Image: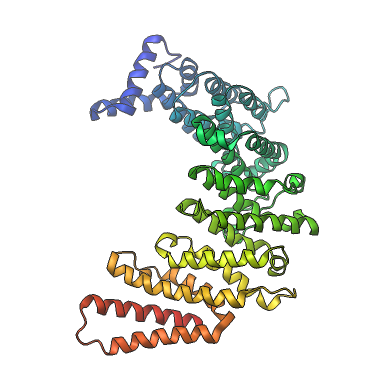
Length: 501
């Protein structure tokens, strides 16, 4: 297939692509793969793929061409002319704007589009940064029907993720230059666009219309992509999910001091369907992590008050916390709370007594229902461990109530571990002793919580251990299952005692 393709060659290509993606005969698939690989490795592969994309003879042909161009751009990025990249960009935009397509096809073309935008970010045509202007072109989608708007928002969200992905650029210096340029020129306007779009989508419409629901999902993902952007060029290994703060630029400040920002997302988390509610909670996790220095003292107190009021509202409502994904994100939100705010500040908010009581009851309920919340326990223990660590430094005259709740939580945890041991043998659940890394991590967190009422809690652990020792010593005619239970209890309580000495 040398030179540009005629109609007959194009029809043959359509057949090969159909065989590659849908063929049931292994020989036909191998032949198709061989022919298509030969085409991909030909000197004029990019020109041919662009020609095929423009003519769009079939969905699978377009899919193969977009995938082929992705590989070629990744392999030959230094040798692809700016004019060719621009032609790819224009062809993808035109297809996405004018031809309704299956989801898999839209996703493939979007990945190609955002890839070529990133590769051409610093390239110019007649001293014009043409690839950066793609953002303005995509925003024209938002002025059309709901389906086009959904596609446009999806493209913008994917573009943010692609810019933020360091593995797609070989030079770390170049990656940080692209990230910085995109952050300074485009990211704030996209975040503002997302906030405006959320406000314009009535929840009642989202809940009753599939198209509106998909649009809301893409808008929430756009906002989440903005908030998880690498604002300061921090490599992934330099921060963790537990301790990282969100380094929002000062120029974004006006959006975060708005009094309706947090309440809006708390309302969405409560009222949207489960899948969208999870996205809203993920956004709230990021909003709770916003750096303290973005606010003045008065603004920070108002922001914290809004956070705590929202937490109380979610706990009082409870409608979404029965769903594992939403529950997990809410536990992450609670853990982030103490990462960014001091216990002195928490104690000083209005309604603290009621809020900390509600959080404590939620934690105890979660520990009791360990089979539902096993993957989220770490976040809850992290919250109470950090709160307990801060007790000696509290200067506020108001009561923090940790002397009441911390012992309840530690004793409930001990009780839940006993029930977990029984559940392992009774119901065939995962044995906590098989994952010593997680067990030690949880016990390390617990050791700080226990020290709030150290004497009482240690006595509880010692008594439980002595009971297990006595039962083990007196075990003469026990069944193998009961003997195994005693061994597991003895081992678990030994770990607990060791971690608290």
